[in-house]
Length: 89
Image (cartoon, rainbow, N blue to C red; front, side, top):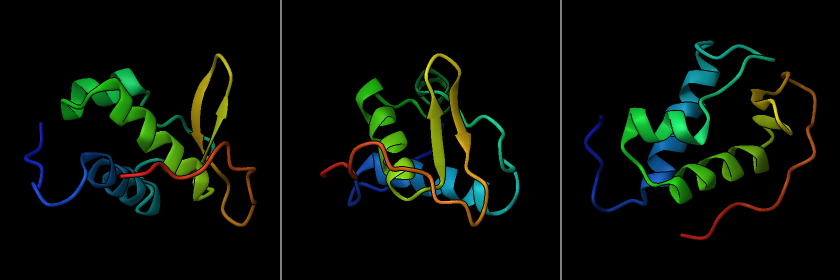
């Protein structure tokens, strides 16, 4: 587990880590990103925090969700329809 900065919401910190992994190719296009349960195990965050991470990344167009399949990295240059809006702090 990582040590979180106390002055920034955890969902933003985890979203930044996942975003970096997408940008550096750790998670290439069309590959699955960690589920909420997997983020719980890796980062020690609450379910609601993991859901905020997914909502924020979807709103940015970085990931898309296939119902029953999971969330995946969006293709570069292809705009995915955002599901919902970025979460509030």
